[in-house]
Structure formats: C-alpha cells, structure tokens
Length: 211
Image (cartoon, rainbow, N blue to C red; front, side, top):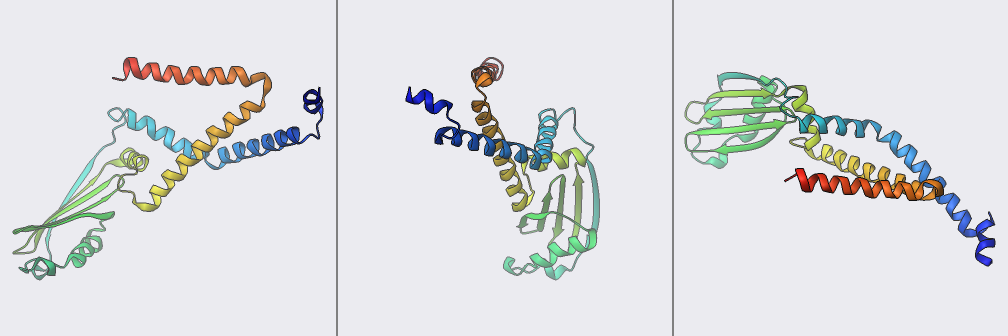
C-alpha cells in the first residue's frame, strides 16, 4: 500500500526525481540535436559519398611546375645542413603550396618534400647538384575534400578534435533519446523491442552479406 501511495504522490522524491530527470534529458536531447545538426548532416552526407566513392568520384586535377632554387640549399654533403625550412617556405611563397609538410627525404642525388591537406597533395623533387626541381600539385575536387574531412586525413589536430566532439555529440543524442523513451510508459516496451530488432537486423545483415 505504501508503494502505491508513493506512486500516486506527486511530491514524493521518486516522482520529483523522474520529472526532473525527464525534463533535463529532454532539454539535453533537443539542444544537443540543434547544436550538432550541421555536424550530423555533414558526416551523414560524406558517409554516403565515401561508401559510393566510385559514383561520387570528383575530377582530379594535376598541375606541374619546373624551376631552380638555390643549389647551396641542397648540395651540402652534410645532410643536416640542407636548408629544409627555406625549401619548404620557397614552394609556399612561389607556388602558394598549402597543407602541412608530411614528408621530407634526403637521398644521395635528390631531395623530396611532400605537402598534404584535405583534397590536396603537392610533391617536389629537387636535384641536389643543380637545385633543379619538379613540382606536382594534385587537387581531388570538392568531393575528395569533404571525404578527407570525414576521414580526418591530413586535416590537422584541430579538425581531429572536431571529429571527436562530433562523435561524442552523436553518442549523447542517442543516449538521451533512449532515456527519454524510458520515461514514456505507453511507448517504452514497444520502443525497446524496436531497438533490439534494429540491432538484430544490423547484425544479421552483417553475418549474411557482410563477409
């Protein structure tokens, strides 16, 4: 009788807690969904372009340049004295090369430097004797750019944080939605059944067609 009485008493601490928890969860679910709308939309769209890369493949454009830089930057026998910073900045200043330096190699006859960014790649090969170089810049287009953003490839540390935050927001939205379902008595059982059914369907699809 006591439990029944408490269940009907709106001021009982259990009922007060349920109301407050429901209110806070609903507030979090709504505003997290609003804040992360653009992020969720972006990763949803790029998930499709990545999964169907052949269909959405953008037009790749490659340009090549030739020239000479100062031979003394590269022809020193001591490889520690090769002017790495000067070389890296030379291509940025002359050809507006973008992206971070992902590789810098010094061989007996040549120096190579690679710049990479989302949807972008530039490679330069320099003759160590003469300073003559060849530069190739490759652009993969808008689709390649957003696909690299989705994968976090050559995007830098800050964008890596964006991906982590986006993943955390998606987890929170999903969890708050599930918690809200638990507060709806009429929909609780059917909602949980559908959740389990969805998980089973996904698992069966993987087991039957995913291998």
